[in-house]
Image 1 (cartoon, rainbow, N blue to C red):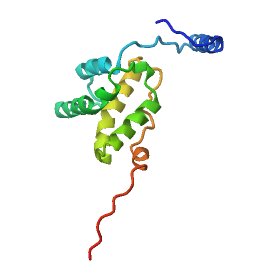
Image 2 (tube, rainbow, N blue to C red; image 1 turned 90 degrees about the vertical axis):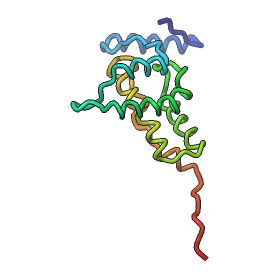
Image 3 (cartoon, helix red, strand yellow; image 1 turned 45 degrees about the vertical axis):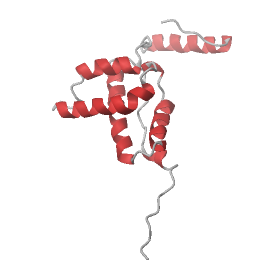
Image 4 (tube, one colour; image 1 turned 180 degrees about the vertical axis):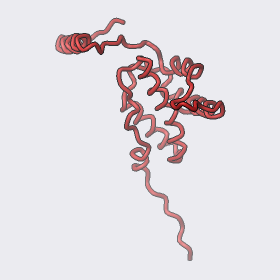
Amino acid sequence: MKRSARTLDEARILKSELVADVARGEYRPRSSDTFAGYVADWRKTYAGRTSRGIRPETLADYGACLDRYALPALGRMRLAEIEAGDLRGFVARLADRGLSRNTIRLALAPVKLVFATALEDGKVRSNPATGIRVVAALRRQPRRRSPRPS
C-alpha cells in the first residue's frame, strides 16, 4: 500500500518509523479493509474468546448492535485508521442521542471484540478500543432530577 505525507518532515518521520518497525520485526502492511468489510468477515469466523466459544444468540445480538450503531458510524472508515478518539466520539454521539449507559455499553462491546480480533489477525497494529469507557461520555449529560414528593 502506498503511503504519503504532506511535508518533507512528515515523510522523514514516516520513513524512520517504517525502518524501525522492519528492524524490530514488527512491520505489518496497513490493511485497506473498511470496518464494515472486516465486520462481515468477522461475523462468519468469530468463535468467541474463551474455550467455551460463543452462543449463536449472543453472536446474533452482537450483529444487531453492530448493524444498528457501529456500522452507520464507522462502517466506511478504514479499519487500520480508526483511532481511540474516533471510538470516544462514537460513544459520545450515542450518549448525545439520549441512549442509556447500558445501551451504549452493549453497543460498544462488539466493537471492542472486533478490534481485539483484528489485532490478533494482524489487521491493526494496536487496539484503539482498549481503555474506551462509557462513563466518560455520560459525564457531560446533566443529571435528571426526580420530582420530590409534596
